[in-house]
Structure formats: structure tokens, C-alpha cells
Image (cartoon, rainbow, N blue to C red; front, top):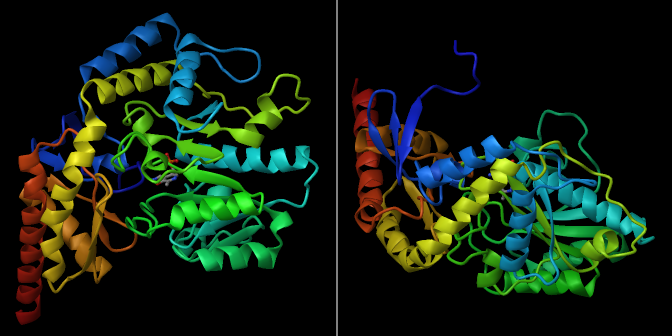
Length: 410
Ligand code: PMP
């Protein structure tokens, strides 16, 4: 038995949209790792930027009274990129830490403002916000909440796309007792890629404003181009109070996340003269080498105009996948927002077998949202490779079906 958790298919190298395993197979990275390898694997430029920073100074904690040039520079750059006025940045080491930090920040904000009853957080069924303490308590996937005994109180769950249900939940709980609404623009792993219903996100934002609730947009997956615009907030015309970032911030070259805050929450803690301090700190907050990786990653994203590439390729990706919905094992194909798509199978077992069979087709794919195949390639994928994904899934489905027939006739 290996000591590392999980199964062992050893991935040893990466180049562009491909990874290589220890048996020398070159495999198209269809999910971009875990939705992160946006600028592609093997970018020497990022490695060099990290190496330079490590030789200079690995890191120094940036909360409290210290900071480092890469953390300061990256914070300025993020604040200028997000569609949020006067944004402040709190760095974390990944998406789950961004979620924990945001919930603490919001709850502390309401306590500081004297609205001490505002503690509950509304999330959606099928939503996924990492699996740390608050994340596990808030996740909209029952399997991820089960088996821990009592979780943290103050969770309200609403259906995925129902604005009337959202307002009913706010009123039922008492709008003065709701701290925040936390949602993904495009639901990613929890429900297996579900793009927003027309008008849902702006409607939810309006409801938050109407009831004085902090609107937290989880852009851990969608941020930095994956949804076909720099942030999903840009695409859907949103102005969140807090935005959560990770993954595409460094394209996975080093672990790094961020909470970007604007409006009243930012004012509570970061306005000159405020008496309130957010007593929260993480050793590796704003890790200097990770920030250097993020800046080199953003340089590539901008120089190669990769967000435009995603937006231009999204309909090609979806159009290629849609015919798969005619296959008897396929329930549905979802996507159309950037390089975020899923091919949902009727049965988890089939999805898992197809994922295994894809290796023989020269591709890696993973199962997400229960029974869906995750199609979220690196932005640098060639059109020819984009076009090969549906055929490979189809061939893998064929292999699985033939194997089943053989087993049944045996
Ligand atoms: N939020 C969303 C929307 C995510 O998809 C994820 C991870 N897939 C997280 C938060 C948690 O991020 P991490 O795994 O980096 O902790």
C-alpha cells in the first residue's frame, strides 16, 4: 500500500496542455489538473521568476506590520484587475483558506458594526466552497458534510437558481440575521459545472443589496479567464463585496489564494482611522515566491491574450461535446461559459470507467459533481486537441460498453 493518500497514477512531467506519466505516456490534460493549469504546464518563465524570488527572499509574513515587494505588487495588480472599487487584498494559501478567511471577515465585520445577529451564511445546493471548517459546514453536497458529527451552525441552503426561494430564505431567517450570501458564478465541482440561469446572479446581487447582505463571489475556479472573461463578475456584470480567488491566480505553479474585499467590509478594517482590526493571520499569507509565480502567470495570461482565446474557443468546445448527449449512457452536456464544461453520465460507475478508459485514448479526465466528466482544459490547448476530446470520450464510452457486454455474456 502506498503511504500517500489516493491512487497512484504517477504524473511526472508537464508541457503545455499535456502531462506525462511514469510509463512515458503523453496525456492531454482535459481537466487542467483540478481546474488550475490555465497557462499550461512547464512554463520555464514562471519557474525562473520563482527561483529568482527564492534566492532573494523565500518569504516573510505579510499580515500585521510587514510586507514584501512581490506581495505588495501583486495586491496592487489584483485590485486594479477586479471590477471592485477601492479593493483590498488579503492573501491565503488556496481556495479553502480564502473561504474561511472571507466568512471570518464578514462575521467580524458585522460584529464590529454592531449588527451582532448577522451570522448566518446562505449557500446553494450543489455549491462547493472548499472543505475546511466553514467550507465543510456550508458545502451543498451532502456526502461532503456527512460523518463529522455536528457542523457549524448558521447555514442556510437554497436551490441553485431560484431567486424567489433565495428571498424567501432571507425573510424566513430574518434579513437582519443573515451575514452573507456565498455563491459561485458557474457552479464547478459540487454539481459538475452548472452555468448560471439568465439573470440569476444579478438578481441575487440585488437581493443582497436590498437586504444589506454581503455578496461573496467564489471565483476560485472562474477567476483569471476560465469563464471566458478575466473574472466571471465581468461577464455577468457583478460587483461583489468580496471575491475569492486561488487556482488560476498562479495556474497551480505554487499554492496561493486571495480574498479581495471592497465596500463596507473593506472600510470596516482598512479605512484610515478605523478602530477595527481583523485579527486573522496565516503564516504563508502573501508568500513571496508564490506571489512571484502569480505575477509571471498574469504576465503570460495578458501577453498571450489567453482570456480572448478562451472566449473564442468556448462555443467550439461546447458544439463538439453536445452530440455526446445522444449517447444512451450520457444524461446531459453542460457548458458554454469559457473552458468550463461537463459531460454528465447517468451512472457514476460509467463515468469512472470512462475516465479510466480515456488513458488508452491519450487523455486524462476526471469525474466531478458526482457523475460528470470534467472538461476544463488549459487555455493553451490547440484547436485540434479541443476537437479530439469528444471523439475520445465517445471511443472510451464504446470501450466501456464492449467490456460490459463481454462481462454480461461470460
Ligand atoms: N471554491 C471553489 C469554487 C472550488 O472549486 C474550490 C476547489 N475546487 C475551492 C473553493 C477550494 O479550493 P482549494 O481546493 O484550493 O482549497
